[in-house]
Structure formats: C-alpha cells, structure tokens
Picture: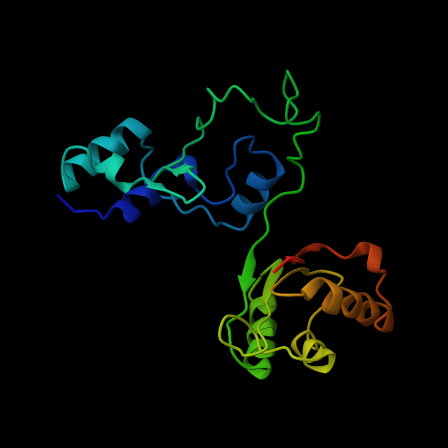
Amino acid sequence: MERLSPERAILRDPTIRAGTGRFGGRGRRLMEGREQGLAAGFPAIDEAAWRRRVEAELGQGAVADLARRLRSGIVVEPLYGCRAGLDDPVGFAGVFPFTRGGDRGGGAGWQITAALPAGDVESAAEAAVEAAAGGADALLLSVDAAGRRGVAVDDLSAFEQVLAGLDLGRLALHLEGPEVGPALAPALVALCRRRGIDPASLRGSVADDPVT
C-alpha cells in the first residue's frame, strides 16, 4: 500500500480541489475550465475515510495532533471539506438569519495570486511579468525597503519599475507592508491615469497598518 503524507492525503480529497468553495458557482466553473482540479483523476473520498487513513499512517489521535491553535485562540483544523462550518450558529453570508449579510458574494470567482519574491526590484519585475504570462490573475507585492521581507521599493520610481511590464487593467494588485497606503496607493492611481486606465477599475487591496 502506498504510504501518503498528511499533505498528499489532503490533496486526494475532492472536496478541497482548487476552485471548489462552500457555494461552488462561478469560481468552480472557472477553475475547472482551467483544469486546475487537484483531485482530478483520483477516486472520490470522504472526510471519514481521510481521517481513517491519517490515523492508520500516523497513529491514533493524529488528526487532532495536526490541528494548531493560533495566538488569537482560533484552532485551525488540518482539513476543511465542503461541510465545514455547517453547525456554526453565526450561519453563512446570504443565508437566513443573514447575520453575515444579505449577499453571499459568491460570484467573484477565485484569483490565482502570485507572491513576488523578496529582494531587489529587477528580480521582482521579472517575476511579475513571468507570473502574468503564466496565467496569474493577481500579484501580491510585499514592500520592505531593506529587501529582507519584501521587495526593496524605497521610492516611487522603484515601484513603477516593478509594475512596468504589467497590464493593470487585467491584473489585481495586493499591496502590503509598512506605510504602503499613504505612499504607494496614490502612486498607483497616478500610474494608472498616465497609462489611460480608470483608477475606479482597479482591483486588489492595500494591507496597511497605520499604527505600527
């Protein structure tokens, strides 16, 4: 019998194939159309069978040992299937009693996001073009002037260099790092205007902590 690591066993669960969410819909069709199903070609397996296999490989109680508790106190389970959260009293977005809002927001689909490597601007720009050509829908740009935890963007010209070969009308851009909001968000808007792109059409996010 082939021995599977917990990670490989997870990939054989069709309920977590890429593009399959709690509600399915457009995101599922989009990803299946790109043949990104990680479980394609494998027989269907339910959560109970997965748990039995993990315990057979790693021992009794191994599933519980694979869970981890975050500093916030939230427990992250090793596997989430399509029925995860059904017993949550808060409910689901778009479903009675609408505790989480009246719109489930399931029509946006999935994004294939490529994280740009930390380091110099030239390498990041090259990686960005390669990711876009390879089918990425979005880019994650972490900024760190020192280049240790993100791309060494220390001025606006460096920022524009990273985005030089990209179609910002098609790609979503997610920015994160100290003070990216006040510095880079306005620069991104100005760059789009120079390229003839309506800033209102931009997609993405700015993860900026104004306190730290």
